Image (tube, rainbow over the protein chains, first blue to last red):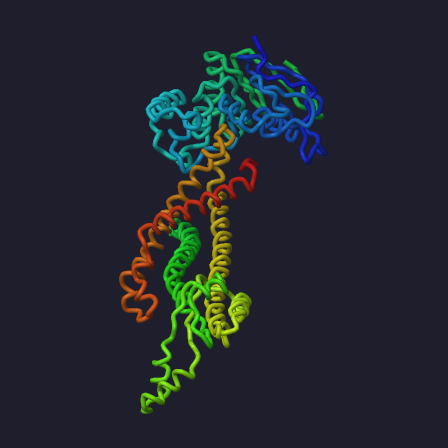
Length: 224
Length: 271
């Protein structure tokens, strides 16, 4: 299997390189792998995720995602890469003025799919995350767990090669968290999607084989 | 209410610019004939001992476009009423020849002085009266008013443009969340800024419509009863249907500039 993410001597920093968060990290992730990244608060987990979807440029080293070198990438290529990623946030990042259905199909809208395709896909996705009856509601009318399921539906809408999830269950109760883990496991297992999850805690019940990286003292170490 | 207020904050400055543009167009059209009149009414007076042909005037000064002899009989008739014919003939014989000389364009005082000197090269020409100072001051006043108006409209436009950009920044902030999410999922700049373009285009159409209404009212209702001679005479020039196109084009141009300025001034909307 080919690598979908490769980091080589990667350094991530803020303030024009003055504040280093991750230093000299080297790792690679293959297609279809499920990866957990854990570490203490402020260790740089979310920073690494930001770098993976191109919001933060590496200060040093190389970072290649989906064959695209993010060290020196043009905005147009970066936009294209992002259309192949499914990103899930702890705070959901839904558009509150849009309905649940419209939020779920945002990547399809960006990709320019026809209205018919968008509507069909919206029904399929919301059925998949068990939110069909909420299609015409607005995000703020839903519970946190339901909002995050919309976020997952949005991330899955274009069958992305890679799902990047930043504390996807951080604000959810156990029941809602388990639903989200199930959805991501299914994506990884059935669609061969690479799933990379930043989290404080690996779920106690997890059926798929996975890899586990810890970020500590600016380094990225594989422990499982 | 907030929705209306937000749109008015954009439409009103845009209307200020459009009213300025239309006012300038109207002013330009209605004063064109006045300006032409100022030029056409202008003539020089040439006094000569002997009759002079037009070709002679032309050879002396190329700017001469026409020459009209002022009948000496008329002058005598006006100044010497009641005298007998023989006395009148003697006066006429003693009088020089008077010519009203028109030029092909309006010239400033310096050029008028040059023309005067050129004409005086002919020994028969005793006097050339240019009326330069009185004509020049009227023309300069007219030009000054026009310049002041342009300057005023320019500054109004600049201030209005800043207000438009300010309002656009408020919109951008209001739609920041949506634009941010779209950017993360790879939406190109034009797509995620689409909402700004939509609102701006809608307001551009509204502002054009309202400005056209104002000037249509001025043309069809107010101009007729204004009692201002220059406006009554040029009523049909106050607002032309083609002006709607000019206003719409200007409004769209302004909003596109404003949207691009706001979108590109802050690189990206991500946190």
